[in-house]
Image 1: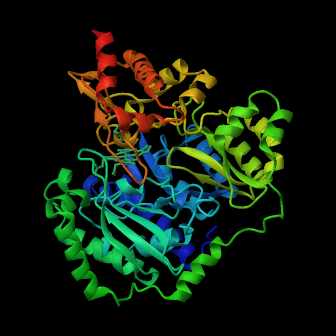
Image 2: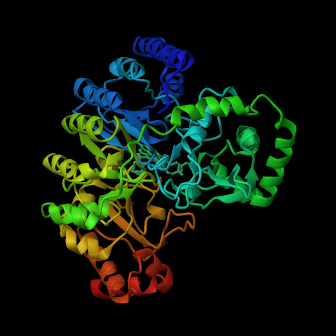
Image 3: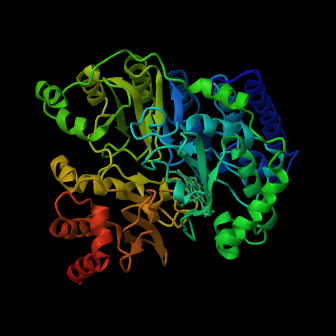
Length: 551
Ligand code: HEM
Ligand code: SF4
C-alpha cells in the first residue's frame, strides 16, 4: 500500500489548517456563502437534506486497518456511529457538524486520509478494480498508475476549475471491475506483443442525465506518456467544454458534439505540443511509486480442495464459499468479499462496531489491509484458504457473511431521498423491500449473477443505467414512482439499459422484479446469465409479462 512521504503529509496537513481557518471565517460571517461554497466542495463537504455530508477519499479503494479504526472512531465521535461506502471508492459521513469538520479532517490526516477533491469541478478520486494486484486475470497491476494519477491530479493548478467534475477509472485485467466505460476517462492497461506495458485510452463515458459509453481515443500509449496524454485530454476539455450550461458541461457532451474523431484530433495535436513537457514520466518515478505495491511475503501454500473444505464446514458455508470467495493469483490464498447488504441495513452502510471487528479480522486474516469495491462492498484480499471456515464463522457472528456477492440482493443503491437533497424518491426502503422478498438464498443462487442498481434520481449515483436491472426514482406530481430498465452492463462491452415502460409505485416493484426474473428463468439457455438472456431476447418479453399481468 502507498505510504505518504513528507510532502504528501505536509500537503494534507496544510490543507487541514487552511480549511480550519476558512470554516472559522465563514462561521464568523467574514466570508459569504458563495465564497465558502467552492472552498467546502474542494474539501468534500456538501450541504444535504438534514446536515452537511462529508465525502472522504479512499484512493483506488485501499484501506489499512489503522484507517478503518480511525473511520470507526470518527463516526462515533462526530457522527451517528456508522459510515456509508459509495460507488466511487469513497466513504461518506451523513451527519457531521460543520464546525467539527476541520477536526474530522485533522483526525483523518493523521492516518493519511483526506477529503480533498472528493467534490467540486476537479479530478475526483481515481478508481480501480477491488482485486487489483491479486486477480488471476490481471495483466498489469493498476495501483501504481492510479497513485501516479493521484499525485499528478491532486492540486493540479490547471485542472482545479474544470467545466464539471471529472472521473478517471483504471483497469488492468481481462474483466473490467471498475466500470471504466462509463467514466470521463477510462484507462485500460495491457501488454503489447513484447510484453511491455501500454495503455488504451477512452474518453467521454458517463452516467446521469445523458448517459454515454466512452469512445476509444487512443489504442496505445507508452507509460512515460500516460500523464502527458491525460494532460492533453483535460486541456482540450478545459478549453472547449461548455461552461454556460451545467447539464452540458461534462466531457461526454463535448466528445459527442465534436464526434470522437474530431475530439481525438484535437487531443493528438495538443499532445504534440506538450508530449515532452514536465508531465513526462521518468522511469525512476514509475519505479518509486511501484515499489509501494510489490507483493507481500506470501507463504508457499498449496491450493485447498474446496469441495473437501465445504464438506467439513457447517451449513451455510458452502454458498458463501461459492459466491463470496474470489480466486487469488497465489496458490493457497483467496480474496473474500463482505457484502454490505444485509437485509435492513442501507446498502453500503457499516456501523462503528462492525468496522472495529472488520479491522481486527483484517489484521488477523488479511495482512492488515482491505479494499472497497464500486459495488459498495469490502474485500479481504489476502486470506489463506485454510482460514476460510474460521473467518466465515467470525463474519457470520457480526452479520457480514451474507452469501450474496454479485446476486440480486447485492444491489448498488444510492442514499436517495432519505439523505440526498436531489432525490426524487427514496431508494433505501425499496432496497429493503426487495431484500425481504428475495431472502431465499437458494433462489438467489439459482437466478445467479445479476446487477441490480437503484438510483433515487437521474444523477445516477448508483449507476442504474448499467445495472442488468436498473431502477430509477422519478417524481410524478409529488409522488414517488420508480422506472425500470433492463439490459445495462458495466463490463468492457458496456451497454445502457432500456426502459421497459411506465413507472411503478414502490410497493409494486418487488413483484415486477419477480416477473422479470420469471421471464429469464423460463427463457434462459443452460448456464446463461441474466444479462446474456436479456441481450438475446430483448426487452419485449419482459415488457409483455410485466404490463400484461399488471393490467
Ligand atoms: C448525498 C449526496 C450526493 C449528491 C448531492 C450527489 C450528486 C450527484 C450529481 C449532481 C450527479 C450528476 C452528475 C452529472 O450528471 O454530471 C451525481 C452523479 C454520480 N454520483 Fe452522486 N451524489 C451524492 C451521493 C453519491 C453517492 C452516495 C454515490 C455512491 C453511492 C455517488 C456516486 C455518483 C456516481 C457514481 C455518479 C455517476 C454519474 C457520473 O458522474 O458519470 N454520489 N451525483
Ligand atoms: S442518484 Fe440522485 S438521489 Fe441518489 S445520491 Fe445521487 S443525486 Fe442523490
